Length: 149
Image (tube, rainbow, N blue to C red):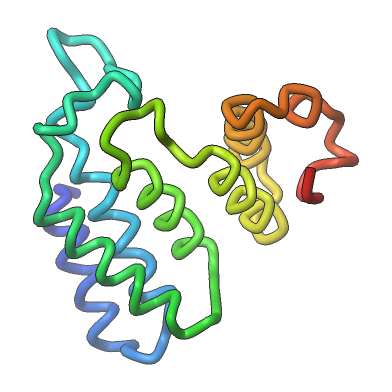
């Protein structure tokens, strides 16, 4: 499915379920993620987030995604889509990759881990902790996963 169709369907879901925060979290996540598409690959090679040319990011998509996320979070009923969108928002709101708020991202992964205790979420949490300077916590066994470190 093309991105435009997926976003259309997510927006349709939002219009059909206007009181459901996750129905706003889903398109927020999709928009914030897809806004970086043009900067993800250069000369056939995947470009790490911190090295992406932010001038190639779609500012309109980012703005719409941030607005949807703000509306969803104002309902104070966070779910997995909202948390993932909040993580994506932290990535797109920095002027350069080195100023990413990794401690906040790690805390968001702590919350997400309680909702979705998957290997991918555990790995992403460990990366966020390592980037935040908490390498011992990042490499700790799963018994510590999801607790504030």
